[in-house]
Image (cartoon, rainbow, N blue to C red; front, side, top):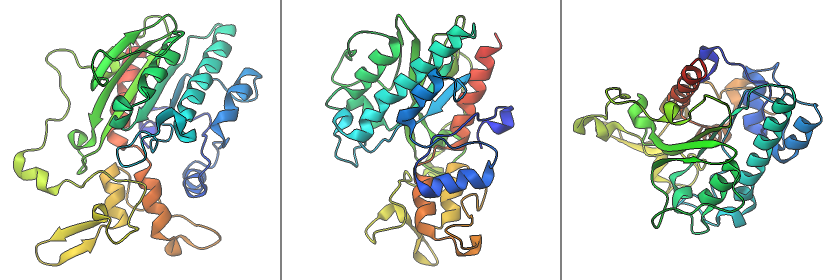
Length: 298
């Protein structure tokens, strides 16, 4: 959704959750879904799947979220972050052997990764940069934005909030852009030069209309306050799936698909809420993609 308007096309997906996989198959039937991401590095190395120009993903954030157990890399979901680096390394190895420029790596996660007690972000940066040990922050946690110049890759990161990209949702996420490509500077993607800016923050009176961060919980438990809104005339009501889609920048009914042999009209709300909560904010990703395109054209 974010990068198709920019002329980019996915070579493959790697999704294991059944419902999101069905959404991908519905909208992009000609793009293979390879499933388990941990197996893809080996497939890239032997030429079974393409080594893409851009590798983009977001390994599971629950291990680093303040709403979760914060087990970091000791959680199997957090350990997938290192597998993501292995996939990036395999991609660049194959591209180099063919005389192709290194890939651009994009990664997204929750801000909690910056303060993970096990220094998960430092481990990720060290592995991505090509250092032989984890990197350490200068303070108690990693800053909201920064860059690292390593022997293998240059890396930039920055927290971006969806509310400043035209969406009615407070959603702060860490975006990382890294590459070993000659002449490509990730800082030019994530940091504006002086005199340029993104959408300005909402005015004070507009903030009351912002939805809290969407999560994978969806409209499940009755005490899940994120699933409800207060209207002056109607009182409290459940936030609709369509409103969630709009809060992430998706078209209405993007997740309304045939599911388990039943027509789209009978698609349950639960898996839709979860899929939307686990997705990325479309305008934010589009902004990152535009920055990558601009940097690659230099």
